[in-house]
Length: 191
Image (tube, rainbow, N blue to C red; front, side, top):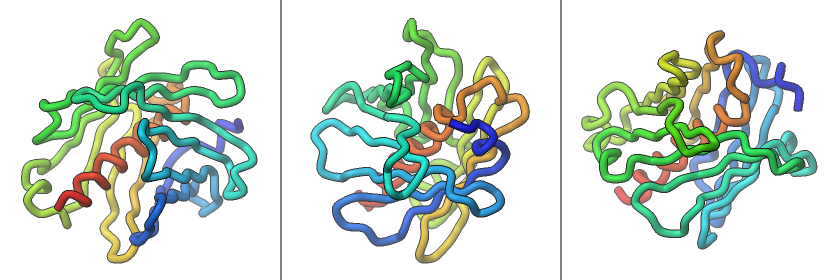
């Protein structure tokens, strides 16, 4: 994978209407497609792949839930070609009711950082039209931001990778953004 494709700001778009699956297109700041995700809705254990193209010929990452049912869901992010572990994200379950919070774990299951919803999270639960924001922090340093952009007929988010985040695998940061968006989608479906 060319890591230069994942520098700076990425825009993640999802069509407003989709029935059996959700598709996400990830573009760089020049508008070039750098990743494509098709997330099936009807799976017992959540799993999806990130591809470099819409033909789904070049896989970039696999994101898979460890459990089918849990309060603290954990997702492993892996390289699909070598099966190398890239990282794990674990939700904080009931502590995430008011503000979505995820622990970023190392291979020994020890927290190395967090992904946390910022801003007016409680107000967003009552008024879902308000855009969401998340901060990804590793080792006490913010390495990325995820910001929802208000659009009427398209869901759009921006993943901004900070200069301090150069040591974190871009596929892992993209997985963080995708899991935040999936959580947001589930919340919208319940309302």
